[in-house]
Length: 378
Image 1: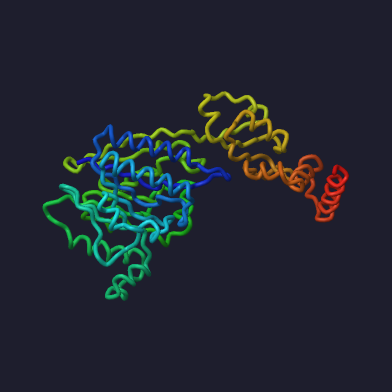
Image 2: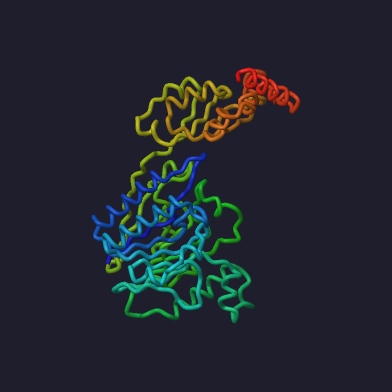
């Protein structure tokens, strides 16, 4: 049996104030084509289905379409666990009813072991957990649980004791393994080390399908992060090949199937003149772009010119107005605020043309002038 491993869809995510639903619909469509073309027998989604615990209506609609397509149209079982971004209780709503339609969801940890039995393989489900959650579920082990790693050991030991020796044993989990390589969009993972656990905890499983870290990577021969299906940040993720992983339960071979983004992410660095005349493929220029202007500050006029060249400009970084050694960043969202907020335009004008930060007194005088002009125009 072939089982597809994916994770960290982050449905409803935004970047620089822009929703990425079109890109997310694109990768879901690609995953569905892979399911059909590769004769996939089941799908595992290792958490962070949504970007927020209270998902938007559009994100929920996209999830509903994806699950309907996989479970009903392709008649493929889908196994989902909650990640730290998901609302566990919301995701798990009606889970028993949905299981009858081959959609198996585990939102939070339960005393009863959650697993899905598929032909020659049992898939154990371990959503995002906390130390306190495990203590509440297993009060008899409270004294021995002094860290998140100890909490994981308690849960995993319960699963190991449940193993059927005649089957393969998979674990679907959302966790942060020590020494995993993170990306800029791994915001929760890069802060501190309290949520990190060692890979040795999962010894005994034939395959551990992980979510949480956004870069596709093998922890060892049997533990893998499949990564996000699209890039959610600039920097490291620009060079990552996004993919899904297909595991053959008979041979235990892992096949990495690439995904092709609707919009590439690229950071361009150069002088303003160089960036106004880029030497790059059209799909790169029309992709999601971050600019680093090296020779001068970028004001409204030059930013308008750049937006004509790069229709999906997300962020612009340039020299600071008041210090040659520092830089400033301007997102497209901030740029659009300037277009509708006269005070923002005035502040930018003072910085760009006068090389000063306007005082509150200057701003109040400007506001009064705007009000007088608007009254005279009526």
